Structures are given as structure tokens and as C-alpha cells.
Amino acid sequence: MVVHTLLVVAVLALAGPPVAAQSPAQHEHAGAPPERLGTVHFETSCAPEVGVAFDRAVALLHSFWFRAAIGAFTEVTARDPGCGMAYWGIALSQWGNPFGGFRSPQALAAGREATARGFAAIHLSPRERGYLTAVSELFRDYETVEQRTRSLAYEKQMEALSRAQGADTEAAIFYALALAQTALPGDKTYRNQLAAGAILEPQFRTQPDHPGIAHYLIHSYDVPALAPKALDAATRYATIAPSAPHALHMPSHTFTRVGHWQDSIDTNVASAAAAHRDKSVSEELHALDYQVYAYLQTGQDRAARKVVEGLPALAAAMASAPPGSAPPVAGYFALAAIPARYVLERGAWAEAAALTPVATPYLFADAMTHFARALAASRADRPAAARDDIAKLAALRDGLTAKKDAYWSEQVEIQRRIAEAWVIYAEGRRDDALTQMRSAADLEDATEKSAISPGPLVPARELLGDMLLEAGRHADALAAYEASIAREPNRFRGLSGAAAAAAAVGKADVASGYRQRLLEICVKADLPRRPPSRRPPLY
Image (cartoon, rainbow, N blue to C red; front, side):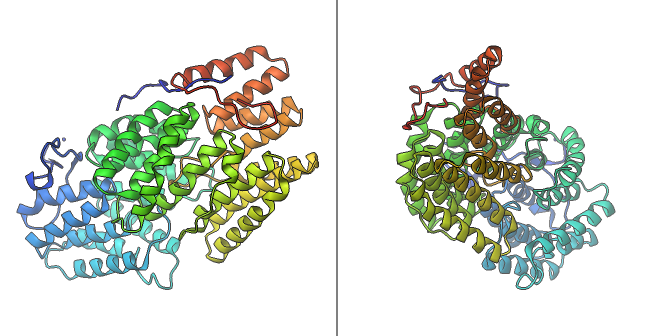
């Protein structure tokens, strides 16, 4: 991947004893480059001859290559049945992506069984018992204890272990990840994220080839206010562990937050290809969602469409896919988000109305299609046609509330408010519509995106700018667009809307600046976008 500072795309229509985690020959296939997973060393009381294999397994775990990690830790137990820490690794791998939502009972049962086997192992030092005690909290009484409660208990145990084992850098690194995992999306002080970063940044200076440190810095700073702090880790992680599909994808979290679209495209092209080879369907779809998001910001609509056309085959593969780096929810989310993004970013209202809702195990994934349909119907001056989809959004929101999923219930409520606002606007009640849109934008600003998504289908405050612009309130529209740009930089629609609003209020220099930025971003764009709407295009 070539990392530029701002070389993006599309056209404006307007270290030492640590053992480097290389795989032995049996882990490679003919013609493949040598496996590179970074440099990890984890002291254990296991048999010395499994040390290299154990380090490799931990490196796989640090890059969220969970299926491979479980296999690697299991190989360690075959060679040294008394290695208790191998069962710790299996348990943490069964927990999976810490940002991936709720776990299946099968994974939780497997994790609990692994911890029990670890405690029974003959090679287990007091330090290693601390690791097992911590990971066991993730599975303890999972039938009756809420996941967040268990995650917080794990975080506290890892804090105690890290303090007690001051020289154990792996304990500190996993504690930092636990802090990032339990950060609340509504905490705008970013207390946990900054605390995690304060642990990881000094470690990165002394262990620059460590995959977990780079990876967890990106996750810790995966919010607009902190994302620039992760750029160094983002530019380096894919070169540290290029064999891991997730390591190739993760830099795009930062690139998306700062608007480095071509960098995001490049790293996700590589990640999707690696995930495809690994048959990690959810990981491939997760990379494609970020990839399509970046294509659409740069006007590369044909490339985005090619991804959309390939979704049916990936959807069919989801049913039998083995677990990969990304949890199944990321795959189902991407299957719904990609076609919705493709139509909404282009203002293709007729195409959006033709989207077919598909029920999945995840209500918030189902909501995206209904949101796209409702928004499109209202924007095409068919408010009555939006009502059924808005009612479905309300039902999905209530279903998530009943499941005690407060975060996603709120995200679907934001979508419902946006869709309702545009219905009200289409009915001619502009002041009421703007009030509703502002409430949606304020609610969205008060939280943060999930790690499974590059961002909302369309930012609420950007849509507020659209509404204000159409209502002739150009100065207010410019303020809304600029507020959205500050949070979601270099978005095609945000920049083009800001240019239109600035021109309308006579700020020619400001308008020219936004147009110039679009030209720089959109050097690889297809033909100018002309949304099929009776209204003047915002682009």
C-alpha cells in the first residue's frame, strides 16, 4: 500500500529475543510470500520447544485472525498438553473481535471450556493464572450476566494484572485493548480511548514491529476527534503484518476518519483479496464496505457498482462461512449497507426505492434498507410511500430496545427521525421538518460510529444542510455543511453542498476553496453525477 498524505481520487461534477512471527513451511502455500505477522514475544512456562509456535499464535490473535489463532494455539496444546496459556489464547480467540457486538452461546461455551482446561493445566505460573482469571470473566455466568458487565470485569482484572506485572508488556497491551473495548460511544471526554493510547504509544516506540500495538492504537483513536493521533500506526500496520487480512483493512478506519480516500481504497482492495483467499467472508465484506464508502466519496461510481454486483455471491457464501477476523454481524451489516450507500450517495432515488429488504439476524442491519427506501421516497416527493418503511424503522428500534441494545436502538431512531423529517418537508411543513432534522443531527453528534461501519449511510448534519439549502436558508446550510465536514472530512456530498451554499451567500472564495478540494479528491472520478431528481443537483 502506498500511503500518501492526501493523494485521493475522483471528479467534481461541479525486535531481539522476541521471535518474529513467521510461519513454518506447513503454514505457507506454493508461490506465496513468507508469512509476516509482526514481532511478538510472550513469556510462558510452557515447554521451550513450543515458544516460537506460541508467539506466532499470539501474533495471529493480535491481528484478530481468530480461526487461525485457535488452530495455532491448538497445535501448541498438541505438542505440550500441559501448556495452560494455550487455552487462554483459545478462550480469547473464541471471544473474538472485542468490538463485534454480542457473542453466540456456542462461542461463549467454547471460551468457558477453554478457560477451565487452562486452569487444569500443569504448566501455569501465578502470572499465567492471572491471565486465565481475567479471560474467564468474559464467559462467567454468560447465561445470566450482561455482556458489558462481564467486559468491565475483564478490564478490571487486566488492569490488576498489568499493574502487578509491570515488566510484562503483553499484559499492558491487552489491558489497553480492554479499555478501548469498554469505551462508551457517548463519552465525549474519550477517557478510555486516551488512557489506552497513553499505554500503547510508548510501547510502539520500543516495539515498532508489534502488530497488536499498531492495531489497538487505531481502534483506540477511531473517533473523529482523535483519529489524527492514529495516522502513524495506520501507515505502518499493514507493513507490520501484511499476511493478516485484518491488518490490511484496519488502517482504513483511520484513513476514513481523516478523509484519505485513496489510501482507504488501496488497503481495502488488498484486505478484501486476502480475506477472499482465506474464505473469511465477513472480513471480505467488511473491507468492501469501507472500500465502497471511499469509492463514492471520490466519484468512482463504476468501481462501487462492481462491488454491488458481486454481493449476491458473497451473500450466498455467508451461510456456510467459517468464522474469520470480522464477526458475522460485520458481513450482514455490509451486505445491507453497501447497496444503500451506493444509491443514497448518488441521489439515485428510484434505485433506492427498488431496494428489497432482507431479514437478517441483526435488526440494525435490516434497518438500513428501510431507511434508504424511506429517505428516497421522500426526496422524490412521494412521502406517502415512505410511511411503511418509517413504521418498520420504529418497529426495529423497539425490537432493539427490547433486546437491551441501547446503542443500535438509538442509531435506528436517528434514521427514523431523518426519514420522518423529509416526509414532513415533502408535505410542506418546513419549520417542523427542520426541527426534526436538527434533533436527529444533535442525537447523532452525541454518539460515535460503531467499528463495523465506516460511517452513517449519510451524516444527519449533512442532510440538514441539504434541507436548509433546498429551503433557501443558504447561510444556515453552509454552517450545517461545515459542521458536518469537521466531523466527517472530505465527503463528496458535504463538500459539494458547502460549495453550493457558499456560492449562494456570495462567498465566492469559500465556494472556490471547496470546489478545489473536490477536484483534488476526485481526480479518478467517472462522469459527473447527475442525481435523478427534479431539484437542482447538490453536486
